[in-house]
Length: 363
Ligand SMILES: C[S@@+](CC[C@H](N)C(=O)[O-])C[C@H]1O[C@@H](n2cnc3c(N)ncnc32)[C@H](O)[C@@H]1O
Image (cartoon, rainbow, N blue to C red):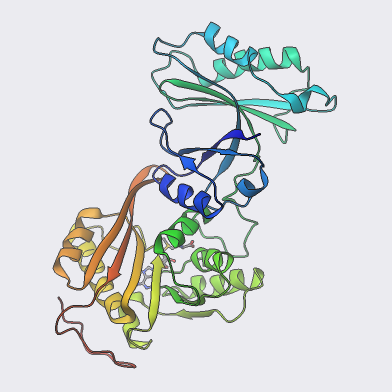
Protein backbone atom coordinates (compact mmCIF):
# COMPACT_ATOMS: atom_id res chain seq x y z
CA UNK A 1 0.00 0.00 0.00
CA UNK A 2 1.39 3.41 -0.85
CA UNK A 3 1.69 6.30 1.60
CA UNK A 4 1.50 10.02 0.95
CA UNK A 5 4.62 12.16 1.43
CA UNK A 6 5.29 15.87 1.10
CA UNK A 7 8.84 16.78 0.08
CA UNK A 8 10.25 20.24 0.77
CA UNK A 9 12.79 22.13 -1.30
CA UNK A 10 13.71 25.71 -2.30
CA UNK A 11 10.72 27.55 -3.73
CA UNK A 12 11.01 27.20 -7.53
CA UNK A 13 12.93 23.90 -7.59
CA UNK A 14 9.75 21.75 -7.62
CA UNK A 15 10.07 20.78 -11.34
CA UNK A 16 13.54 19.39 -10.63
CA UNK A 17 12.33 17.39 -7.64
CA UNK A 18 9.63 15.97 -9.95
CA UNK A 19 12.33 15.17 -12.52
CA UNK A 20 14.45 13.38 -9.92
CA UNK A 21 11.39 11.42 -8.74
CA UNK A 22 10.66 10.45 -12.34
CA UNK A 23 14.17 9.00 -12.60
CA UNK A 24 13.13 6.77 -9.66
CA UNK A 25 9.85 5.85 -11.44
CA UNK A 26 7.81 7.90 -8.97
CA UNK A 27 5.29 10.52 -9.92
CA UNK A 28 5.68 13.78 -8.02
CA UNK A 29 2.99 16.48 -8.13
CA UNK A 30 2.78 20.14 -7.41
CA UNK A 31 -0.73 20.86 -6.28
CA UNK A 32 -2.20 24.30 -6.42
CA UNK A 33 -3.08 24.13 -2.75
CA UNK A 34 0.44 23.51 -1.57
CA UNK A 35 2.77 26.45 -1.05
CA UNK A 36 5.83 26.86 -3.31
CA UNK A 37 8.66 24.57 -2.24
CA UNK A 38 6.44 21.50 -1.66
CA UNK A 39 6.02 18.41 -3.86
CA UNK A 40 3.54 15.63 -3.17
CA UNK A 41 4.33 11.98 -3.94
CA UNK A 42 2.93 8.58 -3.15
CA UNK A 43 5.35 5.74 -2.55
CA UNK A 44 5.13 2.19 -1.20
CA UNK A 45 8.54 2.45 0.46
CA UNK A 46 10.54 5.23 1.99
CA UNK A 47 13.94 4.06 0.76
CA UNK A 48 13.89 5.69 -2.73
CA UNK A 49 12.87 9.02 -1.19
CA UNK A 50 15.87 8.94 1.14
CA UNK A 51 18.15 8.94 -1.92
CA UNK A 52 16.73 12.24 -3.26
CA UNK A 53 19.29 15.01 -3.62
CA UNK A 54 17.09 17.93 -4.67
CA UNK A 55 15.11 18.17 -1.43
CA UNK A 56 15.40 19.29 2.17
CA UNK A 57 12.86 17.20 4.12
CA UNK A 58 10.49 14.24 3.82
CA UNK A 59 7.15 14.58 5.57
CA UNK A 60 4.99 11.50 6.03
CA UNK A 61 1.49 12.98 5.87
CA UNK A 62 -0.88 11.84 8.64
CA UNK A 63 -3.73 14.27 8.09
CA UNK A 64 -4.48 16.87 5.45
CA UNK A 65 -7.53 19.00 6.06
CA UNK A 66 -8.91 21.79 3.91
CA UNK A 67 -11.18 24.66 4.72
CA UNK A 68 -12.90 27.51 2.96
CA UNK A 69 -13.64 29.24 6.23
CA UNK A 70 -11.03 30.75 8.59
CA UNK A 71 -9.12 28.24 10.72
CA UNK A 72 -10.13 27.90 14.37
CA UNK A 73 -8.16 26.24 17.15
CA UNK A 74 -11.02 23.74 17.47
CA UNK A 75 -10.56 22.64 13.82
CA UNK A 76 -6.80 22.33 14.38
CA UNK A 77 -7.33 20.18 17.50
CA UNK A 78 -9.79 17.93 15.63
CA UNK A 79 -7.25 17.53 12.82
CA UNK A 80 -4.63 16.45 15.37
CA UNK A 81 -7.06 13.98 16.99
CA UNK A 82 -7.72 12.31 13.64
CA UNK A 83 -4.02 11.63 12.90
CA UNK A 84 -2.84 8.02 12.77
CA UNK A 85 0.63 7.25 14.16
CA UNK A 86 0.84 3.43 14.10
CA UNK A 87 4.60 3.44 14.76
CA UNK A 88 4.06 5.23 18.07
CA UNK A 89 1.49 2.77 19.41
CA UNK A 90 3.96 0.11 20.54
CA UNK A 91 6.87 2.44 21.30
CA UNK A 92 7.09 3.22 25.01
CA UNK A 93 10.55 4.77 24.84
CA UNK A 94 9.96 7.64 22.44
CA UNK A 95 10.35 11.39 22.80
CA UNK A 96 8.62 14.08 20.79
CA UNK A 97 8.67 17.60 19.52
CA UNK A 98 5.98 19.44 17.56
CA UNK A 99 6.99 22.21 15.14
CA UNK A 100 4.80 24.44 13.00
CA UNK A 101 5.42 26.17 9.68
CA UNK A 102 2.83 28.87 9.20
CA UNK A 103 2.89 29.66 5.50
CA UNK A 104 -0.46 31.43 5.65
CA UNK A 105 0.64 34.60 7.42
CA UNK A 106 -2.95 35.87 7.68
CA UNK A 107 -3.69 33.15 10.22
CA UNK A 108 -4.85 34.73 13.52
CA UNK A 109 -2.64 32.42 15.65
CA UNK A 110 1.09 32.24 16.10
CA UNK A 111 3.08 29.10 15.24
CA UNK A 112 3.65 28.58 18.97
CA UNK A 113 -0.10 28.49 19.68
CA UNK A 114 -0.63 25.89 16.95
CA UNK A 115 2.33 23.85 18.21
CA UNK A 116 0.96 23.85 21.76
CA UNK A 117 -2.56 22.86 20.67
CA UNK A 118 -1.33 19.98 18.51
CA UNK A 119 1.26 18.86 21.11
CA UNK A 120 -1.42 18.75 23.82
CA UNK A 121 -3.63 16.47 21.71
CA UNK A 122 -0.87 14.13 20.55
CA UNK A 123 0.94 13.93 23.89
CA UNK A 124 -2.45 13.14 25.45
CA UNK A 125 -2.46 9.97 23.34
CA UNK A 126 1.29 9.22 23.49
CA UNK A 127 2.68 10.62 26.74
CA UNK A 128 6.29 10.99 25.63
CA UNK A 129 8.73 13.43 27.16
CA UNK A 130 9.10 16.56 25.06
CA UNK A 131 12.62 16.85 23.70
CA UNK A 132 13.53 19.96 21.75
CA UNK A 133 16.90 18.57 20.60
CA UNK A 134 16.99 15.22 18.79
CA UNK A 135 13.49 13.99 19.63
CA UNK A 136 12.70 10.50 18.35
CA UNK A 137 9.51 11.75 16.71
CA UNK A 138 9.20 15.12 15.06
CA UNK A 139 5.58 16.03 14.40
CA UNK A 140 5.17 18.92 12.05
CA UNK A 141 2.21 21.14 11.23
CA UNK A 142 2.31 23.00 7.91
CA UNK A 143 -0.42 25.57 7.46
CA UNK A 144 -0.79 26.36 3.75
CA UNK A 145 -3.37 28.84 2.41
CA UNK A 146 -6.26 26.39 2.53
CA UNK A 147 -4.58 23.28 3.90
CA UNK A 148 -3.48 22.16 7.29
CA UNK A 149 -1.11 19.22 7.02
CA UNK A 150 0.02 17.25 10.05
CA UNK A 151 2.92 14.94 9.36
CA UNK A 152 5.79 13.04 10.87
CA UNK A 153 9.01 14.66 9.63
CA UNK A 154 11.22 11.71 8.76
CA UNK A 155 14.39 13.71 8.11
CA UNK A 156 15.59 15.45 11.24
CA UNK A 157 18.60 16.90 9.42
CA UNK A 158 17.98 18.40 6.00
CA UNK A 159 19.05 16.04 3.20
CA UNK A 160 20.75 19.06 1.62
CA UNK A 161 22.98 19.44 4.69
CA UNK A 162 26.16 17.60 3.84
CA UNK A 163 28.85 16.39 6.22
CA UNK A 164 31.07 19.31 7.30
CA UNK A 165 33.62 20.13 4.60
CA UNK A 166 37.21 21.18 5.31
CA UNK A 167 36.51 24.47 3.46
CA UNK A 168 33.07 25.98 3.87
CA UNK A 169 32.77 29.68 2.93
CA UNK A 170 29.49 31.53 3.65
CA UNK A 171 28.85 31.69 -0.09
CA UNK A 172 28.82 27.87 -0.41
CA UNK A 173 25.79 26.64 -2.26
CA UNK A 174 23.30 24.18 -0.76
CA UNK A 175 23.89 20.74 -2.23
CA UNK A 176 20.26 20.38 -3.35
CA UNK A 177 20.54 23.53 -5.46
CA UNK A 178 23.76 22.27 -7.08
CA UNK A 179 22.14 18.90 -7.74
CA UNK A 180 19.04 20.57 -9.23
CA UNK A 181 21.23 22.63 -11.58
CA UNK A 182 23.03 19.47 -12.71
CA UNK A 183 19.71 17.78 -13.47
CA UNK A 184 18.61 20.86 -15.40
CA UNK A 185 21.91 20.92 -17.31
CA UNK A 186 21.32 17.37 -18.59
CA UNK A 187 25.00 16.56 -19.15
CA UNK A 188 25.86 13.67 -21.50
CA UNK A 189 27.43 10.65 -19.80
CA UNK A 190 31.20 10.88 -19.96
CA UNK A 191 30.93 14.62 -20.74
CA UNK A 192 33.33 17.33 -19.58
CA UNK A 193 31.75 19.61 -16.98
CA UNK A 194 33.24 22.95 -15.96
CA UNK A 195 32.46 25.23 -13.00
CA UNK A 196 34.35 28.52 -13.52
CA UNK A 197 33.13 30.15 -10.26
CA UNK A 198 34.02 27.12 -8.19
CA UNK A 199 33.96 28.44 -4.60
CA UNK A 200 34.06 25.42 -2.31
CA UNK A 201 33.42 22.97 -5.17
CA UNK A 202 29.80 21.97 -4.36
CA UNK A 203 28.85 21.61 -8.04
CA UNK A 204 31.72 19.26 -8.85
CA UNK A 205 31.13 17.20 -5.70
CA UNK A 206 27.44 16.78 -6.58
CA UNK A 207 28.33 16.03 -10.20
CA UNK A 208 30.56 13.14 -9.10
CA UNK A 209 27.63 11.77 -7.07
CA UNK A 210 25.32 12.09 -10.09
CA UNK A 211 27.69 10.26 -12.43
CA UNK A 212 31.26 9.09 -11.90
CA UNK A 213 31.70 9.27 -15.70
CA UNK A 214 31.96 13.08 -15.87
CA UNK A 215 35.32 14.73 -16.40
CA UNK A 216 35.42 17.61 -13.97
CA UNK A 217 37.14 20.99 -14.27
CA UNK A 218 36.75 23.86 -11.82
CA UNK A 219 38.45 27.14 -11.05
CA UNK A 220 38.19 30.24 -8.93
CA UNK A 221 40.26 33.42 -9.06
CA UNK A 222 40.58 33.36 -5.30
CA UNK A 223 43.53 31.20 -4.32
CA UNK A 224 41.97 30.31 -0.94
CA UNK A 225 38.84 29.04 -2.71
CA UNK A 226 40.77 27.01 -5.30
CA UNK A 227 42.85 25.44 -2.53
CA UNK A 228 39.77 24.89 -0.32
CA UNK A 229 37.89 23.23 -3.19
CA UNK A 230 40.87 20.92 -3.68
CA UNK A 231 40.66 19.92 0.00
CA UNK A 232 36.89 19.35 -0.26
CA UNK A 233 37.18 17.24 -3.38
CA UNK A 234 39.96 15.17 -1.78
CA UNK A 235 37.85 14.72 1.38
CA UNK A 236 35.14 13.18 -0.84
CA UNK A 237 37.70 10.72 -2.18
CA UNK A 238 37.40 12.18 -5.70
CA UNK A 239 40.41 11.79 -7.96
CA UNK A 240 41.44 13.28 -11.30
CA UNK A 241 39.55 16.57 -10.85
CA UNK A 242 41.23 19.51 -12.60
CA UNK A 243 41.12 22.45 -10.15
CA UNK A 244 42.98 25.69 -10.85
CA UNK A 245 43.26 29.30 -9.76
CA UNK A 246 42.02 31.26 -12.81
CA UNK A 247 39.91 34.24 -13.79
CA UNK A 248 36.66 33.07 -15.39
CA UNK A 249 36.55 36.24 -17.44
CA UNK A 250 39.70 35.11 -19.27
CA UNK A 251 39.08 31.37 -19.24
CA UNK A 252 39.25 30.86 -22.99
CA UNK A 253 43.02 31.48 -22.82
CA UNK A 254 43.49 28.32 -20.81
CA UNK A 255 41.40 25.58 -22.41
CA UNK A 256 40.93 24.23 -25.93
CA UNK A 257 38.02 25.97 -27.60
CA UNK A 258 34.76 24.07 -28.04
CA UNK A 259 35.90 21.25 -25.78
CA UNK A 260 33.36 21.51 -22.94
CA UNK A 261 30.03 19.63 -22.79
CA UNK A 262 28.47 21.67 -19.99
CA UNK A 263 29.17 24.63 -17.76
CA UNK A 264 27.20 24.64 -14.50
CA UNK A 265 28.01 27.55 -12.24
CA UNK A 266 27.01 29.98 -9.55
CA UNK A 267 28.62 33.36 -10.37
CA UNK A 268 29.32 35.87 -7.58
CA UNK A 269 26.22 37.64 -6.25
CA UNK A 270 27.92 40.92 -5.54
CA UNK A 271 30.47 41.97 -8.09
CA UNK A 272 32.83 44.63 -6.89
CA UNK A 273 30.71 47.55 -7.95
CA UNK A 274 26.98 47.06 -7.90
CA UNK A 275 26.22 49.46 -10.78
CA UNK A 276 23.85 47.77 -13.23
CA UNK A 277 26.25 48.46 -16.11
CA UNK A 278 28.95 46.44 -14.37
CA UNK A 279 26.66 43.43 -14.19
CA UNK A 280 25.87 43.79 -17.89
CA UNK A 281 29.59 43.88 -18.71
CA UNK A 282 30.28 40.98 -16.39
CA UNK A 283 27.58 38.78 -17.93
CA UNK A 284 28.53 39.80 -21.48
CA UNK A 285 32.22 38.98 -20.97
CA UNK A 286 31.39 35.70 -19.26
CA UNK A 287 28.96 34.63 -22.00
CA UNK A 288 31.55 35.49 -24.67
CA UNK A 289 34.13 33.37 -22.86
CA UNK A 290 31.70 30.48 -22.34
CA UNK A 291 30.76 30.61 -26.04
CA UNK A 292 34.39 29.96 -26.96
CA UNK A 293 34.72 26.94 -24.72
CA UNK A 294 31.40 25.15 -25.23
CA UNK A 295 30.88 22.60 -27.98
CA UNK A 296 27.99 23.34 -30.31
CA UNK A 297 24.93 21.85 -28.59
CA UNK A 298 26.52 22.07 -25.12
CA UNK A 299 24.76 23.81 -22.25
CA UNK A 300 25.47 26.64 -19.83
CA UNK A 301 23.39 26.51 -16.64
CA UNK A 302 23.82 29.29 -14.12
CA UNK A 303 22.26 31.18 -11.22
CA UNK A 304 21.38 34.72 -12.30
CA UNK A 305 20.78 37.35 -9.65
CA UNK A 306 20.53 40.39 -11.94
CA UNK A 307 17.97 39.24 -14.45
CA UNK A 308 17.67 42.44 -16.51
CA UNK A 309 21.43 42.91 -16.93
CA UNK A 310 21.72 39.24 -17.87
CA UNK A 311 18.92 39.49 -20.43
CA UNK A 312 20.53 42.59 -21.97
CA UNK A 313 23.80 40.68 -22.29
CA UNK A 314 22.05 37.60 -23.72
CA UNK A 315 20.22 39.73 -26.26
CA UNK A 316 23.51 41.37 -27.26
CA UNK A 317 25.52 38.22 -27.82
CA UNK A 318 24.91 35.71 -30.60
CA UNK A 319 24.94 31.96 -30.41
CA UNK A 320 22.88 31.07 -27.32
CA UNK A 321 19.38 29.71 -27.16
CA UNK A 322 17.56 29.72 -23.83
CA UNK A 323 15.90 26.39 -22.99
CA UNK A 324 14.87 26.78 -19.34
CA UNK A 325 14.32 29.49 -16.77
CA UNK A 326 13.12 28.85 -13.21
CA UNK A 327 12.49 31.58 -10.69
CA UNK A 328 13.76 30.46 -7.30
CA UNK A 329 14.02 31.86 -3.79
CA UNK A 330 17.49 31.85 -2.30
CA UNK A 331 17.21 32.77 1.35
CA UNK A 332 15.63 36.19 1.25
CA UNK A 333 16.02 37.03 -2.42
CA UNK A 334 14.82 36.00 -5.84
CA UNK A 335 17.17 34.51 -8.44
CA UNK A 336 16.77 32.64 -11.71
CA UNK A 337 18.19 29.31 -12.79
CA UNK A 338 18.82 29.65 -16.50
CA UNK A 339 19.91 27.02 -18.99
CA UNK A 340 21.27 28.10 -22.36
CA UNK A 341 22.48 25.98 -25.24
CA UNK A 342 25.32 27.15 -27.46
CA UNK A 343 23.95 26.72 -30.96
CA UNK A 344 26.77 28.41 -32.91
CA UNK A 345 26.13 31.27 -35.32
CA UNK A 346 26.99 32.07 -38.93
CA UNK A 347 30.62 33.13 -39.27
CA UNK A 348 31.41 32.05 -35.72
CA UNK A 349 35.00 31.80 -34.58
CA UNK A 350 36.23 28.49 -35.92
CA UNK A 351 37.16 25.61 -33.63
CA UNK A 352 40.75 25.93 -32.63
CA UNK A 353 42.70 23.91 -30.11
CA UNK A 354 43.78 27.01 -28.19
CA UNK A 355 43.77 30.74 -28.64
CA UNK A 356 45.71 33.23 -26.68
CA UNK A 357 45.12 36.64 -25.27
CA UNK A 358 43.32 38.54 -28.04
CA UNK A 359 40.42 40.67 -26.92
CA UNK A 360 36.95 39.24 -27.20
CA UNK A 361 34.86 40.87 -29.86
CA UNK A 362 31.14 40.90 -29.21
CA UNK A 363 28.69 39.97 -30.41
C1 LIG B 1 28.73 32.40 -5.27
S1 LIG B 1 30.36 31.85 -5.09
C2 LIG B 1 30.30 30.19 -5.67
C3 LIG B 1 29.89 29.26 -4.58
C4 LIG B 1 30.08 27.82 -4.95
N1 LIG B 1 29.01 27.36 -5.85
C5 LIG B 1 30.10 26.94 -3.69
O1 LIG B 1 29.24 26.08 -3.52
O2 LIG B 1 30.96 27.19 -2.84
C6 LIG B 1 31.19 32.66 -6.40
C7 LIG B 1 32.67 32.35 -6.48
O3 LIG B 1 33.16 32.97 -7.65
C8 LIG B 1 34.48 33.44 -7.42
N2 LIG B 1 34.75 34.47 -8.45
C9 LIG B 1 34.27 35.72 -8.53
N3 LIG B 1 34.70 36.33 -9.66
C10 LIG B 1 35.47 35.41 -10.30
C11 LIG B 1 36.18 35.41 -11.53
N4 LIG B 1 36.21 36.50 -12.32
N5 LIG B 1 36.84 34.30 -11.89
C12 LIG B 1 36.82 33.18 -11.10
N6 LIG B 1 36.18 33.14 -9.92
C13 LIG B 1 35.51 34.22 -9.53
C14 LIG B 1 34.45 33.91 -5.98
O4 LIG B 1 35.78 33.90 -5.45
C15 LIG B 1 33.52 32.89 -5.33
O5 LIG B 1 34.27 31.83 -4.77
